[in-house]
Length: 271
Image 1: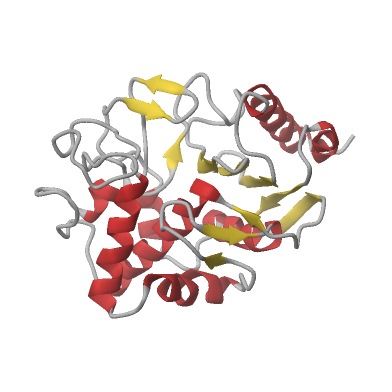
Image 2 (image 1 turned 60 degrees about the vertical axis):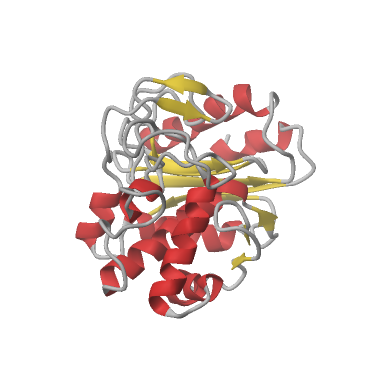
């Protein structure tokens, strides 16, 4: 049975998905042109646009942004000390991994001020247009306000596997652990010691429980969203997976996502 067929049993109204390699989509499910709210999967797109701004020289990873002493890199890696939903400071810079959507709003403001381009438009020009992501739009906050479909995110995932929007050097830097050793919470999955993160993407490492599969490699990176969405890339497999649903993340998802992702890994390793 194709690995994506199990999605037909999920307790959601609508779901679409794809498995992607550097060569393109190898399997898909559902209406892949249907547009969904991405919630925090938005952060992967926003981080990519911020990194384009770094590569273009508009900002630098060590540019001051956010609380005193915080940089663009701290904000991307949730190490700035900012609270989840506000710009209140909850910890000194670089001491805790505090997951902060507000920090991504600061990043968007920083790029907008440096380039003179409204951030949603910058994201379109820097990431969506080069990759042909015509259905993707940032229509709300930079931490969770994008909408997209599987077709577009498959193109994005392919670019994460074989970078063209970024140089290979910067793409590689973004997917390593930044500010190693910081503890913190993965929303919905509890506290991890450490809670490894890259520049905008969560790094799986050896976290348990986790939303990726138990057999995804420690180098797997990506993000999931409260809207019932996720995107991961496993460099060891040379593949990634996108799943979009119309049901908010909750108790229904936790037992399904890990088993599903293990089935995807199994299908890729057996073929």
